[in-house]
Length: 158
Image 1 (cartoon, rainbow, N blue to C red):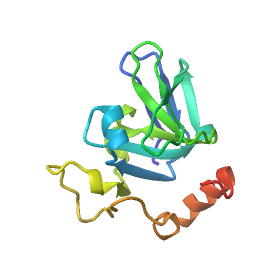
Image 2: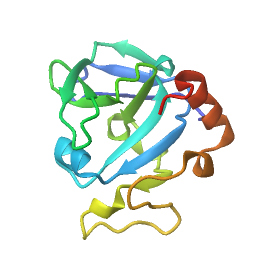
Image 3: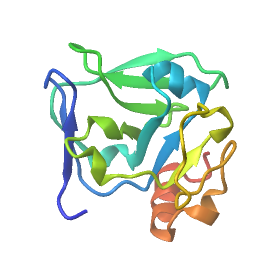
């Protein structure tokens, strides 16, 4: 990253800064993401929790039901309720930052499209970005440095 990326909620109560580039960016087309965002997909930047600097406010976790049954907490602004990031599977060291909450959302294009089996039929996927019906092999797609970062925070945990 040329400069740290900043973002926040709609009302401005929550402001944050990414202290490094994310490990990887997902564009997820699963039904859970469609339902929870009210949109066709969600863009999530996977980054270590300690690499998110909260500049103002305190996002509140809201537990969400999922088709998989795995826990999913969406961290929202307590005032305007905008989702700023998620914790999938209660892994406190890892966050999925909602790219759309960044001031410069265009700075983080997706590295992969996942759960394309449930993408809406009118959404086109670019040929230059890998797409998978469900999920993919991290070791095949993630840069080595990102895999090292992921192992450092999660060890053998998925």
